Image (tube, rainbow, N blue to C red; front, side, top):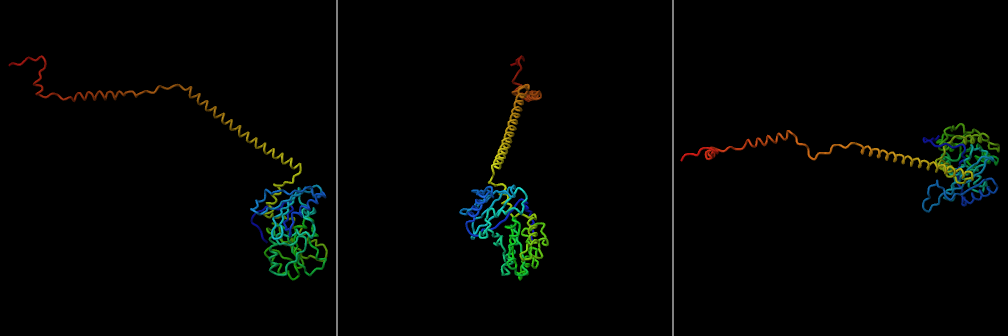
Length: 390
């Protein structure tokens, strides 16, 4: 049985989700006509076609984006349901659609199917095609005769993360009583989420061969609910395998119980459903007057909190600036009150040692004066000496 190692959000109990394909043209007109009629009949409280979806990726040049329609109604008279239908651009002669509906309480399978709020419950309107296999959601789908085609089809069904696929083996070819689709016997909340595959008596071997990769087998004359990909953590093949399905017109209670139990399992949400659910909750536009007032109150509260935060930041900044100015003033006052120091001298005082050194140098200079020689002494007489004889 295939498993996923990546943790995914589980399917909320308040959510109803399905994906399909509308074959043909005028899908949007069909939905509009249906919603307008139900609103006139007071089945739907209101509906809206937003001009744009902010959660959707911007379409490429020349390619139209998906069309988003919203509707709101009361289930069981008191429980508000908000639903969003996403219509993808037309391709290959049809349009894929994704429908998510969320209630204020856990979803009750006895409530009307959200699919019949947007789409007419008319067998001639071909909106009920499974997106993974192209098979009908409201009918019996006989497996092809070619073995390779059977294997390819069942592998696509087993990998489908959206709708529930059930394989029923016919032990013998049934009459018209055994040709009643399972969808007609299921609770309304499951009728447009289940794809029924019918295997002929001789196809048991090829069917089980194709299902080996998913860890399930179809009993002869019985049925099995495929786990899907990724499989629910609590899925056990034995709990969702029915040994015998009587195709004689009687109600297949065991098979209905298996499908209902499987739908109640906590299942991982497909990646696309995670984004669609977030958009349903965050970008919902079909508001009542009370909801609009509540949204405005929240906006006012948010703006008031932002303004309060800005005011507090301004006050803190002003207080810090005042403290800095006070500190600067105190510093200037303390600098002015300090006593004046001695004036700086123009020249450094002379050192006594240096003066003594200079005196000694002058003394040494005079002591080194040269004396006159003897000739000079002979010609020079000291004053007051007697004159010599002739």
